[in-house]
Length: 326
Image 1: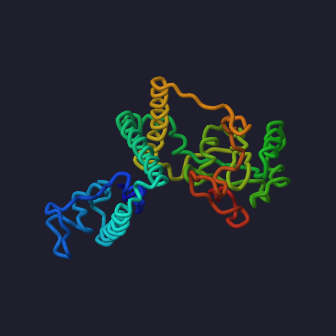
Image 2: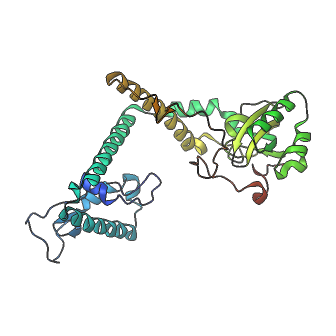
Image 3: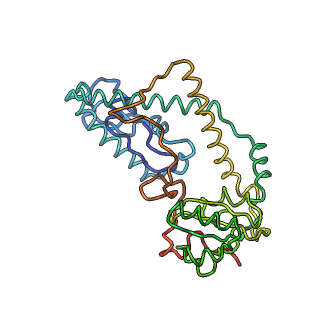
């Protein structure tokens, strides 16, 4: 049973998962209940014969969070464990584990739990990021951390309209004129000029595109919650506050870990497929079963998983990418 997620917030595992794996339970050595007596040595909570010990608690909390945990947080864990244990024991007494729908759900939970645990262990064994790799990434992308770009953009509602704008810019139409005529962003009045922006100061959706451009080059369409953007790099200059390697080391670590984990996961699945032939239907209920095409929906649109904290719409927040330095 995991009480914490990666961000450190409480995650209560449901009673069904406790039924599936039976975590955090220790039976009394005497075989009887405590009758409300004092807790045994090292025991933090007890419901009938089931005990939660100090050792159990340490296993429930990731090592990096143990030193900073507060008394109120520990009490919250104990309260949650007691509530779940009470429900668990009643469910077992009523024979719910033998109920067909519950048994099927338990099997599904067991399958997912074991598959996830295997994946995490395999990734832990296969993925390593060295300090040399971190430094090499920083050197390769050093311009991103030490430069500021003057950006000008046009924001429109559809990908098709953005492609039209992109074509016009590439054939010589000034992006400033197109911004004034067609952009739905409040920067339209100043020709789409966002000023000079460094890494972390612009909408993160832009960074993979614009830092690879030279002055005069244009990118797009780029989808965000504001619509579809066409962006031009008007100029470059040294950053007023360049980011050192130490300042971005954790960010680079996260990037490289994610890249390596994705590659390792695909490698693992390919290995497993070679050992266990996989067959899939090609149609269902008269429908062809095909992978969905790339979605044209703006990135971080409402209702979709968000990869970064989306800013407010342009008519509420001023402009869609932030105000750069003059």
